Image 1 (tube, rainbow, N blue to C red):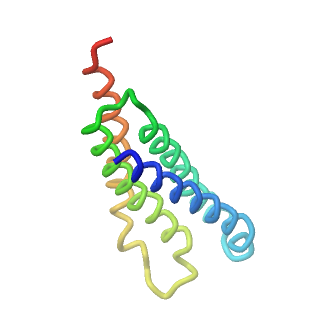
Image 2 (spheres, helix red, strand yellow; image 1 turned 90 degrees about the vertical axis):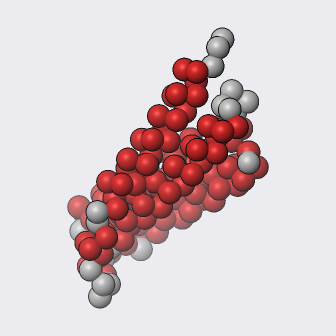
Length: 128
């Protein structure tokens, strides 16, 4: 599982850098400042959680079951949270109205919080 977590962390980190560069250069010409800031929020949360997964995947302090739970909550949370933010920020560039899927953004945020909570609970349960 650790190998998979680190691989996904690397993919999330790499794609966050690509999306950040894309937003800073290509989207700068077609989005408003507010839309760019929204897009950047998605990139920030994606990179933060890529780093979290990297840390969890490489840590010997986190239990195997906790790693698995954290992995699934964080990956789903990033897809829902950052993914929906990317779509909502670029909504004006497409014919489809992505505001219809805007309800998944807070669900993604909640999943990210639950991932962090799983990490916290795993450490609280450990005896020093």
